[in-house]
Image 1 (cartoon, rainbow, N blue to C red):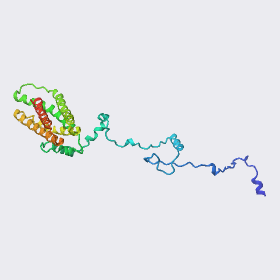
Image 2: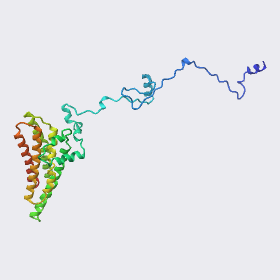
Image 3: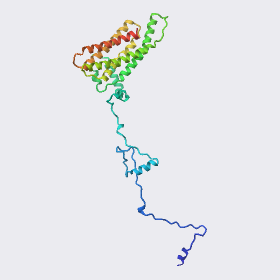
Image 4: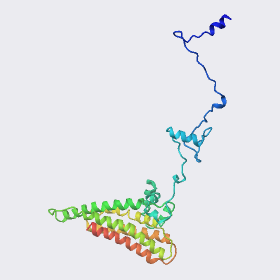
Length: 286
């Protein structure tokens, strides 16, 4: 009894006394545990996380407000697509990427094939993967070589005849080489493509550009030999290179078009290739 009377006495007025802490019990039914939300990175294709207990839309909004951003599902447009089939694909760089997908071994093999004029199997080698790399690289190399070596040959011929004569570098060789080589490599295959289409024969413009581009490679080492200041030897070199290149184009064009009376087409391809060789000699190595 005495102990109970002491415990009931008020003690809050005493110095240093601490009031009792009253704990309030929370009802279990009033306490809600928020649902756990886990995200997997990268997200699955259906745009939902693969973790346990996917959050609802309200929780996603709360996470976004707190600075957490959920990665969206990848779209189908990310996948690699082929070149467009419409006319707009002509002006798209991605349409031509596949035609530059070649390695060094393939290019060297095709370069070596261009030296054999009688084989006629060039189209069978490039059938699975025709390229435009050879057309661009060979034409550009030939333009720079004709511009530089043409001036060098002119200097040597001038000094051979008159050592005291003055000589100036002719910049016009660059323009002439670019117009003639690029124009020939692009326009001539394009013309044969439309001609064969008109005659009812199957033709592929990409394969024509590829074949005519590699046919110009023989003029690369030939232009180096044309620096020799001996006129008779120059004509032998350029005519031999022109005949080899012309036979290469004609033989492969014949096997490509197959049957039919296309003799005039083959003769035109031979003469045009030979005319290019004569033009190179007459203009850049006079």
